[in-house]
Length: 411
Image 1: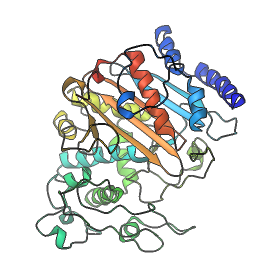
Image 2 (image 1 turned 180 degrees about the horizontal axis):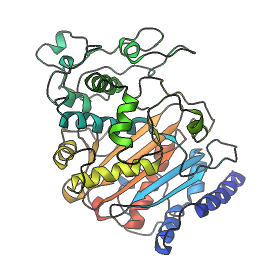
Image 3 (image 1 turned 90 degrees about the horizontal axis):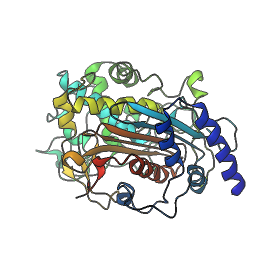
Protein backbone atom coordinates (compact mmCIF):
# COMPACT_ATOMS: atom_id res chain seq x y z
CA UNK A 1 0.00 0.00 0.00
CA UNK A 2 2.82 2.43 0.84
CA UNK A 3 4.46 1.72 -2.50
CA UNK A 4 1.16 2.41 -4.25
CA UNK A 5 0.68 5.71 -2.42
CA UNK A 6 4.27 6.72 -3.17
CA UNK A 7 3.88 5.99 -6.88
CA UNK A 8 0.57 7.85 -7.00
CA UNK A 9 2.15 10.80 -5.22
CA UNK A 10 4.90 10.95 -7.82
CA UNK A 11 2.34 10.75 -10.61
CA UNK A 12 0.22 13.41 -8.94
CA UNK A 13 3.21 15.75 -8.80
CA UNK A 14 4.10 15.06 -12.43
CA UNK A 15 0.56 15.56 -13.74
CA UNK A 16 -0.19 18.56 -11.57
CA UNK A 17 3.00 20.25 -12.65
CA UNK A 18 2.19 19.72 -16.33
CA UNK A 19 -1.25 21.32 -16.36
CA UNK A 20 -1.94 25.02 -16.52
CA UNK A 21 -0.01 28.08 -15.41
CA UNK A 22 -2.14 29.20 -12.50
CA UNK A 23 -1.23 32.26 -10.48
CA UNK A 24 0.80 31.58 -7.30
CA UNK A 25 -2.16 32.13 -4.98
CA UNK A 26 -4.30 29.70 -6.97
CA UNK A 27 -1.46 27.22 -7.03
CA UNK A 28 -1.28 27.43 -3.25
CA UNK A 29 -5.00 26.75 -2.98
CA UNK A 30 -4.60 23.68 -5.17
CA UNK A 31 -1.76 22.38 -3.00
CA UNK A 32 -3.83 22.94 0.14
CA UNK A 33 -6.74 21.04 -1.37
CA UNK A 34 -4.51 18.17 -2.52
CA UNK A 35 -3.16 17.83 1.01
CA UNK A 36 -6.28 18.75 2.96
CA UNK A 37 -8.78 15.93 2.55
CA UNK A 38 -10.77 14.74 5.57
CA UNK A 39 -11.99 11.11 5.55
CA UNK A 40 -15.69 10.80 4.73
CA UNK A 41 -18.12 10.97 7.64
CA UNK A 42 -21.57 11.95 6.37
CA UNK A 43 -22.74 13.90 3.28
CA UNK A 44 -24.05 16.85 5.30
CA UNK A 45 -20.72 17.19 7.13
CA UNK A 46 -18.77 17.17 3.88
CA UNK A 47 -20.79 20.08 2.52
CA UNK A 48 -20.02 22.40 5.43
CA UNK A 49 -16.72 24.35 5.76
CA UNK A 50 -14.56 23.22 8.65
CA UNK A 51 -14.61 25.67 11.54
CA UNK A 52 -11.43 24.34 13.12
CA UNK A 53 -8.19 22.89 11.83
CA UNK A 54 -8.52 19.17 11.30
CA UNK A 55 -6.02 16.83 12.87
CA UNK A 56 -6.65 13.96 10.47
CA UNK A 57 -5.92 15.52 7.08
CA UNK A 58 -4.81 13.17 4.32
CA UNK A 59 -3.50 13.70 0.80
CA UNK A 60 -5.40 13.08 -2.41
CA UNK A 61 -3.16 10.12 -3.38
CA UNK A 62 -3.78 8.54 0.02
CA UNK A 63 -7.55 8.87 -0.40
CA UNK A 64 -7.40 7.57 -3.98
CA UNK A 65 -5.54 4.51 -2.73
CA UNK A 66 -8.01 4.07 0.13
CA UNK A 67 -10.99 4.03 -2.24
CA UNK A 68 -9.12 2.09 -4.97
CA UNK A 69 -9.81 4.86 -7.46
CA UNK A 70 -7.02 5.00 -10.08
CA UNK A 71 -7.92 8.31 -11.71
CA UNK A 72 -9.49 11.65 -10.76
CA UNK A 73 -10.10 14.84 -12.71
CA UNK A 74 -11.28 18.14 -11.20
CA UNK A 75 -12.41 21.54 -12.46
CA UNK A 76 -13.20 24.54 -10.24
CA UNK A 77 -15.25 27.60 -11.17
CA UNK A 78 -14.55 30.76 -9.20
CA UNK A 79 -16.30 34.04 -9.93
CA UNK A 80 -17.80 32.82 -13.23
CA UNK A 81 -14.61 31.43 -14.72
CA UNK A 82 -12.86 28.10 -14.69
CA UNK A 83 -10.03 29.03 -12.34
CA UNK A 84 -8.23 25.71 -12.52
CA UNK A 85 -8.47 22.12 -13.69
CA UNK A 86 -6.23 19.26 -12.62
CA UNK A 87 -5.97 15.54 -13.33
CA UNK A 88 -4.47 12.79 -11.16
CA UNK A 89 -3.62 9.12 -11.44
CA UNK A 90 -4.01 6.79 -14.41
CA UNK A 91 -6.75 5.78 -16.83
CA UNK A 92 -6.29 2.13 -15.81
CA UNK A 93 -4.93 0.60 -12.61
CA UNK A 94 -1.39 -0.63 -13.11
CA UNK A 95 -0.84 1.35 -16.31
CA UNK A 96 1.46 4.30 -16.81
CA UNK A 97 -0.98 6.28 -18.96
CA UNK A 98 -1.86 9.36 -16.91
CA UNK A 99 -5.24 11.00 -16.62
CA UNK A 100 -5.08 14.42 -18.28
CA UNK A 101 -7.47 17.29 -18.76
CA UNK A 102 -8.52 15.66 -22.05
CA UNK A 103 -9.34 12.25 -20.55
CA UNK A 104 -13.01 11.36 -21.03
CA UNK A 105 -14.99 10.01 -18.08
CA UNK A 106 -18.48 8.57 -17.83
CA UNK A 107 -20.78 11.28 -16.50
CA UNK A 108 -23.26 8.59 -15.39
CA UNK A 109 -26.47 10.13 -14.01
CA UNK A 110 -24.99 13.61 -14.18
CA UNK A 111 -25.97 13.14 -17.85
CA UNK A 112 -29.56 13.75 -16.77
CA UNK A 113 -28.80 17.42 -16.08
CA UNK A 114 -27.75 17.85 -19.71
CA UNK A 115 -30.86 15.96 -20.87
CA UNK A 116 -33.19 18.07 -18.74
CA UNK A 117 -31.60 21.23 -20.14
CA UNK A 118 -32.23 20.02 -23.70
CA UNK A 119 -35.84 19.19 -22.79
CA UNK A 120 -36.38 22.67 -21.32
CA UNK A 121 -34.78 24.18 -24.42
CA UNK A 122 -37.44 22.32 -26.43
CA UNK A 123 -40.09 23.83 -24.15
CA UNK A 124 -38.75 27.31 -24.87
CA UNK A 125 -38.81 26.52 -28.59
CA UNK A 126 -42.49 25.59 -28.36
CA UNK A 127 -41.85 21.95 -29.21
CA UNK A 128 -42.85 20.61 -25.79
CA UNK A 129 -44.97 21.62 -22.81
CA UNK A 130 -44.16 20.93 -19.19
CA UNK A 131 -47.65 19.93 -18.15
CA UNK A 132 -49.14 18.28 -21.25
CA UNK A 133 -49.70 14.54 -21.70
CA UNK A 134 -46.44 13.40 -23.32
CA UNK A 135 -48.21 10.58 -25.16
CA UNK A 136 -49.69 13.27 -27.42
CA UNK A 137 -46.15 14.20 -28.55
CA UNK A 138 -44.61 10.73 -28.60
CA UNK A 139 -44.83 9.37 -32.15
CA UNK A 140 -42.82 6.15 -32.34
CA UNK A 141 -43.91 4.71 -28.97
CA UNK A 142 -46.44 5.46 -26.23
CA UNK A 143 -46.26 5.08 -22.47
CA UNK A 144 -48.51 2.07 -21.79
CA UNK A 145 -51.82 3.21 -20.30
CA UNK A 146 -53.42 1.36 -17.39
CA UNK A 147 -55.84 2.01 -14.54
CA UNK A 148 -53.22 4.13 -12.76
CA UNK A 149 -53.07 6.65 -15.60
CA UNK A 150 -56.83 7.24 -15.74
CA UNK A 151 -57.13 10.93 -14.97
CA UNK A 152 -53.41 11.17 -14.15
CA UNK A 153 -51.36 11.50 -17.32
CA UNK A 154 -47.58 11.48 -17.53
CA UNK A 155 -46.14 14.93 -18.24
CA UNK A 156 -42.64 16.20 -18.94
CA UNK A 157 -42.59 17.85 -15.51
CA UNK A 158 -43.29 14.49 -13.86
CA UNK A 159 -40.66 12.74 -15.96
CA UNK A 160 -38.03 15.34 -15.12
CA UNK A 161 -38.77 15.09 -11.39
CA UNK A 162 -39.02 11.27 -11.17
CA UNK A 163 -42.72 11.41 -10.34
CA UNK A 164 -44.12 9.77 -13.48
CA UNK A 165 -44.72 6.42 -11.72
CA UNK A 166 -42.39 4.51 -14.04
CA UNK A 167 -40.67 1.37 -12.84
CA UNK A 168 -36.99 0.84 -12.12
CA UNK A 169 -35.60 -2.11 -14.12
CA UNK A 170 -33.75 -4.51 -11.85
CA UNK A 171 -30.20 -5.04 -13.05
CA UNK A 172 -30.26 -2.01 -15.32
CA UNK A 173 -30.48 -2.15 -19.10
CA UNK A 174 -28.70 -5.29 -20.24
CA UNK A 175 -28.64 -6.70 -23.76
CA UNK A 176 -27.46 -9.80 -25.59
CA UNK A 177 -23.74 -9.85 -26.24
CA UNK A 178 -22.86 -8.77 -29.76
CA UNK A 179 -26.21 -7.09 -30.37
CA UNK A 180 -27.34 -3.47 -30.58
CA UNK A 181 -30.83 -3.03 -29.14
CA UNK A 182 -32.73 0.04 -30.24
CA UNK A 183 -34.19 2.52 -27.79
CA UNK A 184 -37.67 1.19 -28.61
CA UNK A 185 -36.59 -2.39 -27.90
CA UNK A 186 -35.20 -1.23 -24.58
CA UNK A 187 -38.40 0.59 -23.64
CA UNK A 188 -40.49 -2.43 -24.69
CA UNK A 189 -38.16 -4.92 -23.01
CA UNK A 190 -37.88 -7.13 -26.10
CA UNK A 191 -34.85 -8.93 -27.58
CA UNK A 192 -32.05 -8.21 -27.95
CA UNK A 193 -32.72 -6.01 -24.89
CA UNK A 194 -32.87 -8.14 -21.74
CA UNK A 195 -34.51 -5.68 -19.32
CA UNK A 196 -38.15 -5.64 -18.33
CA UNK A 197 -40.40 -3.19 -20.23
CA UNK A 198 -41.28 0.31 -19.08
CA UNK A 199 -44.58 0.35 -17.20
CA UNK A 200 -46.47 2.69 -14.91
CA UNK A 201 -46.56 1.16 -11.43
CA UNK A 202 -47.64 4.20 -9.39
CA UNK A 203 -50.22 6.91 -10.01
CA UNK A 204 -48.34 9.69 -11.86
CA UNK A 205 -47.61 12.59 -9.55
CA UNK A 206 -48.21 10.69 -6.32
CA UNK A 207 -44.75 9.37 -5.52
CA UNK A 208 -41.07 10.18 -6.10
CA UNK A 209 -39.22 7.17 -7.47
CA UNK A 210 -35.88 7.61 -9.21
CA UNK A 211 -36.32 6.08 -12.65
CA UNK A 212 -33.84 5.74 -15.48
CA UNK A 213 -36.76 4.72 -17.66
CA UNK A 214 -38.18 8.22 -17.24
CA UNK A 215 -35.14 9.76 -18.89
CA UNK A 216 -35.24 7.24 -21.74
CA UNK A 217 -38.80 8.39 -22.37
CA UNK A 218 -37.52 11.98 -22.38
CA UNK A 219 -34.82 10.97 -24.87
CA UNK A 220 -37.42 9.48 -27.21
CA UNK A 221 -39.74 12.44 -26.70
CA UNK A 222 -36.99 14.86 -27.73
CA UNK A 223 -36.04 12.73 -30.73
CA UNK A 224 -39.67 12.55 -31.86
CA UNK A 225 -40.35 16.30 -31.70
CA UNK A 226 -36.97 17.41 -33.10
CA UNK A 227 -36.66 14.65 -35.70
CA UNK A 228 -32.96 13.96 -35.12
CA UNK A 229 -30.94 11.35 -33.17
CA UNK A 230 -30.40 12.41 -29.58
CA UNK A 231 -26.56 12.56 -29.74
CA UNK A 232 -26.82 15.01 -32.63
CA UNK A 233 -29.43 17.11 -30.81
CA UNK A 234 -27.16 17.29 -27.75
CA UNK A 235 -24.23 18.36 -29.89
CA UNK A 236 -26.20 21.09 -31.66
CA UNK A 237 -28.07 22.34 -28.60
CA UNK A 238 -25.42 22.16 -25.87
CA UNK A 239 -21.95 21.05 -26.88
CA UNK A 240 -21.31 23.28 -29.88
CA UNK A 241 -22.80 26.52 -28.44
CA UNK A 242 -20.81 26.07 -25.21
CA UNK A 243 -17.58 24.90 -26.89
CA UNK A 244 -17.74 21.55 -25.08
CA UNK A 245 -15.32 19.90 -27.50
CA UNK A 246 -14.77 16.71 -25.49
CA UNK A 247 -18.40 15.73 -24.90
CA UNK A 248 -20.52 13.15 -26.68
CA UNK A 249 -23.50 10.83 -26.31
CA UNK A 250 -22.21 8.72 -29.23
CA UNK A 251 -21.72 5.10 -28.16
CA UNK A 252 -19.33 3.47 -28.81
CA UNK A 253 -16.66 6.14 -28.92
CA UNK A 254 -14.78 6.62 -32.17
CA UNK A 255 -11.17 5.46 -32.31
CA UNK A 256 -9.74 8.90 -31.54
CA UNK A 257 -11.81 9.44 -28.39
CA UNK A 258 -11.45 5.81 -27.32
CA UNK A 259 -7.75 6.44 -26.69
CA UNK A 260 -8.70 9.14 -24.20
CA UNK A 261 -11.27 7.07 -22.27
CA UNK A 262 -10.86 6.41 -18.54
CA UNK A 263 -11.45 2.73 -17.85
CA UNK A 264 -14.01 2.00 -15.09
CA UNK A 265 -12.98 0.08 -11.96
CA UNK A 266 -15.09 -1.79 -9.43
CA UNK A 267 -15.00 -1.29 -5.65
CA UNK A 268 -11.97 -3.57 -5.41
CA UNK A 269 -10.04 -1.50 -7.93
CA UNK A 270 -10.29 -4.07 -10.74
CA UNK A 271 -10.57 -2.67 -14.25
CA UNK A 272 -13.55 -3.61 -16.44
CA UNK A 273 -14.46 -2.76 -19.98
CA UNK A 274 -17.08 0.03 -20.18
CA UNK A 275 -20.70 -1.15 -20.29
CA UNK A 276 -22.31 1.87 -21.92
CA UNK A 277 -25.65 1.15 -23.62
CA UNK A 278 -25.41 1.73 -27.38
CA UNK A 279 -28.76 3.55 -27.81
CA UNK A 280 -30.37 4.23 -24.41
CA UNK A 281 -28.10 7.10 -23.40
CA UNK A 282 -30.15 9.78 -21.65
CA UNK A 283 -30.06 8.06 -18.26
CA UNK A 284 -26.25 8.02 -18.05
CA UNK A 285 -24.51 7.85 -21.42
CA UNK A 286 -22.57 11.10 -21.57
CA UNK A 287 -18.79 10.92 -22.03
CA UNK A 288 -17.07 14.18 -21.13
CA UNK A 289 -14.42 15.96 -19.09
CA UNK A 290 -14.73 18.05 -15.91
CA UNK A 291 -13.70 21.15 -17.88
CA UNK A 292 -16.56 20.64 -20.35
CA UNK A 293 -19.03 20.05 -17.52
CA UNK A 294 -17.69 23.18 -15.83
CA UNK A 295 -18.44 25.17 -19.00
CA UNK A 296 -21.99 23.82 -18.87
CA UNK A 297 -22.32 24.51 -15.13
CA UNK A 298 -21.07 28.05 -15.60
CA UNK A 299 -23.61 28.65 -18.37
CA UNK A 300 -26.47 27.63 -16.05
CA UNK A 301 -25.08 29.98 -13.39
CA UNK A 302 -24.80 32.85 -15.87
CA UNK A 303 -28.31 32.23 -17.21
CA UNK A 304 -29.72 32.14 -13.68
CA UNK A 305 -28.07 35.50 -13.02
CA UNK A 306 -29.44 36.94 -16.27
CA UNK A 307 -25.98 37.21 -17.81
CA UNK A 308 -26.32 34.67 -20.64
CA UNK A 309 -28.97 32.82 -22.63
CA UNK A 310 -26.98 30.59 -24.97
CA UNK A 311 -29.10 27.56 -24.06
CA UNK A 312 -31.85 28.62 -21.65
CA UNK A 313 -33.36 31.94 -20.66
CA UNK A 314 -33.17 33.35 -17.16
CA UNK A 315 -36.87 32.60 -16.71
CA UNK A 316 -36.47 28.96 -17.71
CA UNK A 317 -33.42 28.35 -15.51
CA UNK A 318 -35.36 29.89 -12.62
CA UNK A 319 -38.09 27.32 -13.25
CA UNK A 320 -35.48 24.60 -13.47
CA UNK A 321 -34.07 25.58 -10.07
CA UNK A 322 -37.46 25.90 -8.35
CA UNK A 323 -38.21 23.16 -5.83
CA UNK A 324 -40.91 20.86 -7.12
CA UNK A 325 -40.74 18.75 -3.98
CA UNK A 326 -38.53 18.03 -0.97
CA UNK A 327 -36.83 14.65 -0.89
CA UNK A 328 -36.52 12.37 2.10
CA UNK A 329 -33.12 13.24 3.71
CA UNK A 330 -32.53 9.52 4.20
CA UNK A 331 -32.15 9.06 0.43
CA UNK A 332 -28.74 10.74 0.14
CA UNK A 333 -28.14 11.83 3.71
CA UNK A 334 -28.72 15.48 2.79
CA UNK A 335 -31.93 17.58 2.84
CA UNK A 336 -32.33 17.96 -0.92
CA UNK A 337 -35.05 19.28 -3.15
CA UNK A 338 -35.94 18.12 -6.65
CA UNK A 339 -35.99 20.71 -9.40
CA UNK A 340 -36.65 20.10 -13.08
CA UNK A 341 -33.97 17.46 -13.63
CA UNK A 342 -31.63 18.75 -10.96
CA UNK A 343 -31.10 18.34 -7.21
CA UNK A 344 -31.26 21.46 -5.04
CA UNK A 345 -29.52 22.15 -1.74
CA UNK A 346 -30.12 25.07 0.60
CA UNK A 347 -32.26 28.15 0.11
CA UNK A 348 -31.91 31.83 -0.58
CA UNK A 349 -28.38 33.06 -1.17
CA UNK A 350 -27.09 29.74 0.19
CA UNK A 351 -28.78 27.84 -2.63
CA UNK A 352 -26.79 25.39 -4.78
CA UNK A 353 -27.65 22.89 -7.49
CA UNK A 354 -26.04 19.51 -8.01
CA UNK A 355 -26.24 16.17 -9.74
CA UNK A 356 -24.07 13.18 -8.79
CA UNK A 357 -23.77 10.08 -10.91
CA UNK A 358 -22.55 6.49 -10.67
CA UNK A 359 -22.23 3.95 -13.48
CA UNK A 360 -21.48 0.25 -13.33
CA UNK A 361 -18.98 -1.32 -13.30
CA UNK A 362 -17.29 1.70 -11.70
CA UNK A 363 -17.32 5.38 -12.69
CA UNK A 364 -18.56 8.47 -10.89
CA UNK A 365 -19.32 12.12 -11.48
CA UNK A 366 -20.13 15.03 -9.17
CA UNK A 367 -21.33 18.43 -10.38
CA UNK A 368 -22.22 21.30 -8.06
CA UNK A 369 -22.93 24.98 -8.73
CA UNK A 370 -23.47 27.98 -6.44
CA UNK A 371 -25.35 30.60 -8.50
CA UNK A 372 -25.29 33.54 -6.08
CA UNK A 373 -21.54 33.39 -5.54
CA UNK A 374 -20.85 32.25 -9.15
CA UNK A 375 -18.80 29.21 -8.10
CA UNK A 376 -18.83 25.56 -9.02
CA UNK A 377 -17.07 22.20 -8.78
CA UNK A 378 -16.90 19.16 -11.05
CA UNK A 379 -15.16 15.96 -9.96
CA UNK A 380 -15.01 12.82 -12.13
CA UNK A 381 -13.39 9.46 -11.36
CA UNK A 382 -13.00 6.01 -12.87
CA UNK A 383 -13.76 4.13 -9.66
CA UNK A 384 -16.89 2.66 -8.07
CA UNK A 385 -16.12 4.43 -4.78
CA UNK A 386 -15.47 7.70 -6.53
CA UNK A 387 -18.39 9.69 -5.19
CA UNK A 388 -17.23 9.22 -1.60
CA UNK A 389 -13.84 10.51 -2.70
CA UNK A 390 -15.56 13.33 -4.62
CA UNK A 391 -17.37 14.50 -1.49
CA UNK A 392 -14.03 14.68 0.33
CA UNK A 393 -12.59 16.71 -2.54
CA UNK A 394 -15.65 18.99 -2.64
CA UNK A 395 -15.34 19.55 1.11
CA UNK A 396 -11.65 20.43 0.77
CA UNK A 397 -12.40 22.91 -2.03
CA UNK A 398 -15.26 24.53 -0.10
CA UNK A 399 -13.05 24.79 2.98
CA UNK A 400 -10.09 26.27 1.11
CA UNK A 401 -12.14 28.86 -0.76
CA UNK A 402 -14.41 29.59 2.22
CA UNK A 403 -17.34 29.97 -0.09
CA UNK A 404 -20.17 31.60 1.88
CA UNK A 405 -22.78 29.99 -0.35
CA UNK A 406 -22.75 26.78 1.69
CA UNK A 407 -22.68 28.28 5.17
CA UNK A 408 -25.74 27.01 7.06
CA UNK A 409 -27.30 25.90 3.78
CA UNK A 410 -28.99 22.98 5.50
CA UNK A 411 -31.04 25.27 7.72
